Image (cartoon, rainbow, N blue to C red; front, side, top):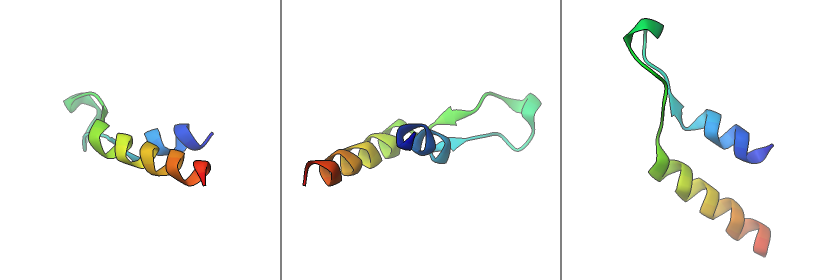
Length: 42
């Protein structure tokens, strides 16, 4: 559930739907996932 929420948070959508596909910022998502995993390990 937290992962899906992070993916939605870091997904950027075009201003108009017909202008392109949604894009996930992988670098920011990976950093957030690393932080989440580090938080769980403690």
